[in-house]
Length: 360
Image 1 (cartoon, helix red, strand yellow):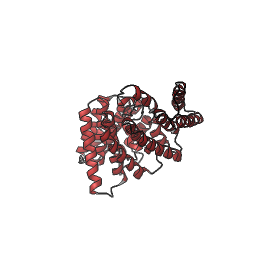
Image 2 (tube, helix red, strand yellow):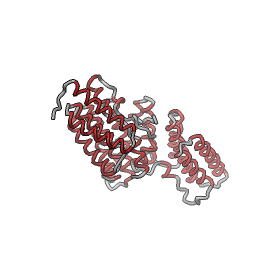
Image 3 (cartoon, rainbow, N blue to C red):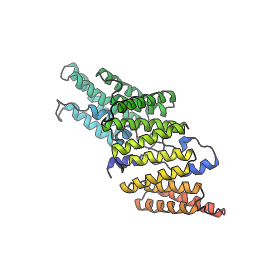
Image 4 (tube, rainbow, N blue to C red):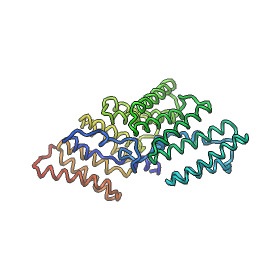
């Protein structure tokens, strides 16, 4: 399994177990069960939007523009941007920001002295502003990230890009998620709807669109679907997430870890609607995908299945699945997953002590 694949799944660490038990006793706010675009190192899902963009197979705003076709790799600006990207990957955020700002200074000087063509100038600005915005978002500096994403959009438009271009829509999704995090819900929904609308038209007009276009539609559907899930608009959320999962299968393949993220999201919606049989079937698919790609989150999936059986008093099935979860968690030395499995088994024991008989 690739490092990027593990990043996607490691960004997906929420469990349904406590939610299932709590939903029986009291009315939970969906955010207590459902992943959301936050960096809490997100929902508890820990990646930024830039990670999610790459996880869905997108080229991404920065890579779209970091071409400088007439430049060699030894060009100082190209080298600076590469160094900054490397620093950001290492979470050396202050160093990355410093290098990016030095690059911006050089970019402006080269353009003023006519050493850089207009297109290269805006390419470079888009790259730097977008990367700086991603760093700010990772650090939960929301106001700063908003300004930087808007500067990225401005540079895109100055370059002559249409608002319906993939890169512009990608930034629209990022801004929408930023607004969702800062509880500017009306603005968030407006952005998500616009992104979905634009991308739906694109693939409808051209069913042979490239994978990057389909992946961006998948990201828009996923982001809007999770937003609706958070606001308990479950009937509207589920078809968006189902369509997103279908696109992930098409673009990334049957065994890609991103499918697990989406299948578990779909199962969450089904559970919140009390459609436990459907949720069970969805989680079976997630387990099948996880087994094929040998993801480290298999224990969490088994725990989630166990939680469904616990909810329906199928204690034997619950014990079997949570036992598998515990075994795999210990094999993977995954303390988080081990805690999930142990909690599941403890709940089963408590039910049996109450005299509850297994429904199988």
